[in-house]
Length: 135
Image (tube, rainbow, N blue to C red; front, top):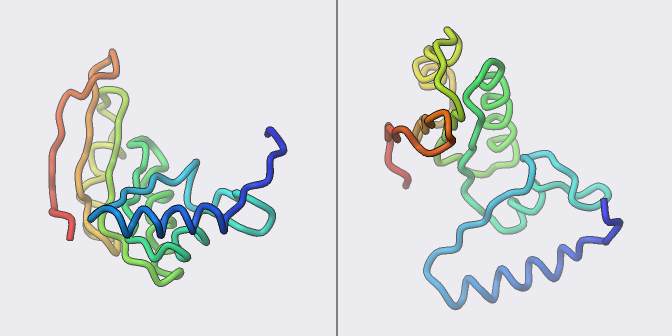
């Protein structure tokens, strides 16, 4: 939006420098797996260049299962490891799709659900259910 070019090479150099200084680096993608960060270059391409394992985070609502499954498949197509899926909800729901997403996702996903975050109406976490460990 600001029409400022993204210098991917500078990002990669800074990432490599940081990796040499610390044991673990957590990288948050911006906007999603297939968001373009410069012409012809996507968040997914940056993850490949950094050789990162991927944790998929999806908003827990109608349509999230499809979104999450497509993202997990795309991560695999890029030959990266999906370490888990986080389902994040900002509202209390009795939606049938939301209530069944854990069972469906575990049966149909190439990675297990790592956790399911439910929130109170004010947005604060109501609970965190952990289903698998990250490796």
